[in-house]
Length: 352
Image 1 (cartoon, rainbow, N blue to C red):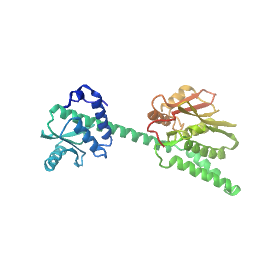
Image 2: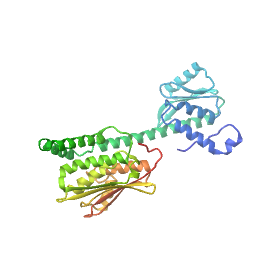
Image 3: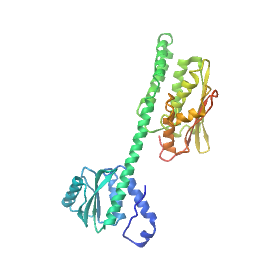
Image 4: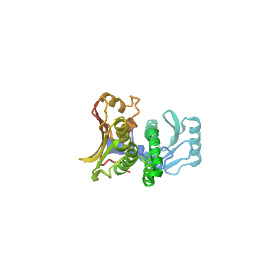
């Protein structure tokens, strides 16, 4: 976010060294992440008062409930100014007590009240700093909502074909092998719980592998000897935090597109290990594979493919870890498919 060219009063060192000013501006921006009515709005008002050396600073959203920092204000006059600003969307009052509207993304978001000897340029810069903080918070919230929507969409992509086949197999075993039917029903319950229930944004590799094992147990019941499975995970990566539901979609694609179309036996291998500071997980099948160009189109979400969630998982990984991460697909026609997930073993802010 660009920081306005702040014209501050105060000692000469504050004017010649921009670092403290920039740090204060960033802190105010962070405190306004949740808006003018958020729990940290008072800290933001305090930061603005100190940054611009004012007697008082007030912030309010459209409710008109003022968050104040500084010397006691004339509550009646201040409330009247805020009410006028929120109804007219125009500045009200004049120094030493002035209220100005705050428009974020061209919509009125609230008002800013400034008390003290402050010039027109400083009023504009104070308001600009608050507005930019509000707009950044709105964009970040929109990105978080979009990520949550993608995760909901991924949950909704569970194959009805798989669900029907799994339940059919379980029903067929109720009389002939009730213990086996009971175990599979418990597996199915675990599978649906993990895939559909509400979860946090992150989990750990151990939980993702547990979900994969449950899914493969159900698929082995459906496909019988046609499906061979090899799972190997190193203990040192079990506690690594990863975005929720990033492995099961890869394994489901390996079964659906690598094993099911084959007339004979197919193998799915899932491996997880540490490579330096990274956790590397691969999902490999020995199916028909595809042209690399088609794999690229699938990851870009351009192919209209029924491969479950690959583009979704890739986008989520890149949004969390950066452009260097995401999915790598190694494939060729007739050579099977290997999908590799590489994530940092330790990433600030990524906690289960």
